Image (cartoon, rainbow, N blue to C red; front, side):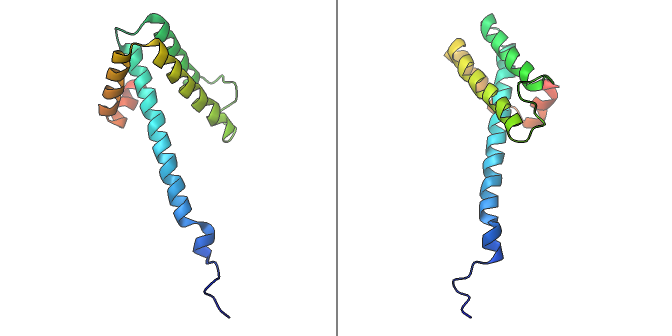
Length: 122
């Protein structure tokens, strides 16, 4: 038998696909953590208008609230509504917050180590 054209078990499992997906999920997770850091920094910044702070507080409150539109324990869909709230909230904050303040908070969010910012949130 000629095995040159046969698909190997490794190709079927897609180890390169799995690695690519893992890297994508890792990158997306880091992006979500960064966005959450930006929101918490905006909440503390003195030049952010009160209505933008109210939007930021609602975003953080929704993400950590046990009461949600779609419960988080439902696989995939439960996490997608959290991502949608975060992304739409950041777009709204981008419109409501002065650009210089938003840029400042984004730069600060890049400088904060992940474990240090998690301790601040808790």
